Length: 432
Length: 102
Image 1 (spheres, each protein chain N blue to C red):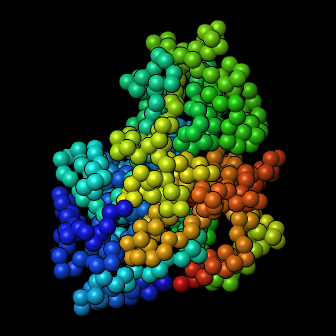
Image 2 (spheres, each protein chain N blue to C red):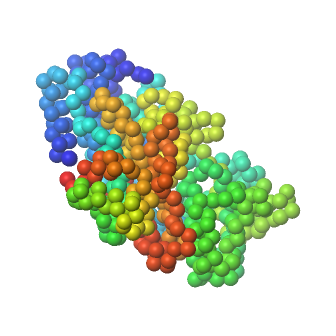
Image 3 (cartoon, one colour):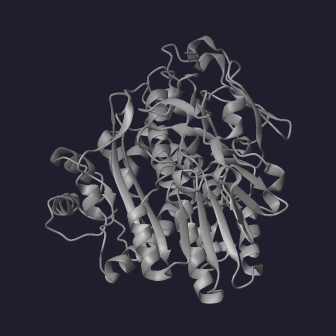
């Protein structure tokens, strides 16, 4: 671990409005730096990064916090299925950094981090600047692995969208669905574990079915799954049978679902050792995933492409001054969800403030709540409470679980109202 | 609570000015109860309240604790709060509840 007292200067270069250089006379002698002199750089303005930045300022108003995010407007992945189903438009899922900047005093820099020099404790920006840090927080999200299935590459994503990072990709898939004729076939290739938002693919087909039922009722949906089971499966299948008849067909990996090749020109997915060819009018190929590229480039990932962290603080196992949270991290029993990233952001902010002020770490406890819409008025949820135990975030026994099977229409509708409340609440907690 | 923090931050700044910057008096102590309590804010805040989920920040600690116990013990009907409340012991509920109503 770096010893603060050995450093005579803390240089915060290249960023206007960030901390001024620390004078020699103020250098702490016990390895503890006063909060108002510390500079925390947060990479990525999604759920994990924005929450960390905000709660750092909430806990330590004098800490200098710089948030680096390439996009001026961030589109949340959660809610993007509502766009695909025609329930809301893109503006609904757009978040900005105005409040973090103006109300919380966070230095928001619109740029992209292209390199991390962990020894010198600075990051390099695409725009050319170098930014020094005392603590670095990385919430880089996911990157795609197109190498798992032959025939398709990232260059095909404009024609065959993944729509697994919201924004332009969401727009592309929505316009393809709108252009598809009644009686067309929508095919989704669902990704292998672990991946961002485990129930997401199945909420997506639900809301696309809702759109088809209203506008294109003769259409069909086929899910080719890389897995033999999925999140909230019983609840989704119950809802699909109730609302969509036989419009949605799910093929598990062991029964013809495993995509072996994609013929992008023919918009066809090959399965069953070439004996089965599934032709799509609209094809949504969601690739296998790994931690966002910058985490890999910084040498923070393991052989599987994800980031090992000390789960009590989300501090990287590779570097004592770097914290990694959200989808990119290995977080024990916690799923890769926006809500997980939000609670992890609070854990990271706590850990950094405690460490910077020379206090003992806090043993974390956290939660996840994840709603999925089966129709706009029928939602199902999964919830969990986690504790740090034996080196990992572990689900508390007897707590959590999914919505009951066979619940009343009223119960499902209440959860659908809470789904909207959840979106309003969590986006306010993160970016408000 | 926020006032206490502002006071503590101010105190830290004063100490720094008189040359005692090596003392780690800078910002409030964050407790496990507080860390648990702020997880509630993701869903229970002013924006969510417009959609029928209560903003719990002004609720008195006694009410927070009694309702969490009621959800946990099955004495109050719920869609999801029972699944959360069963994750906490009495001590944890008290520790969390102390951070409401300020």
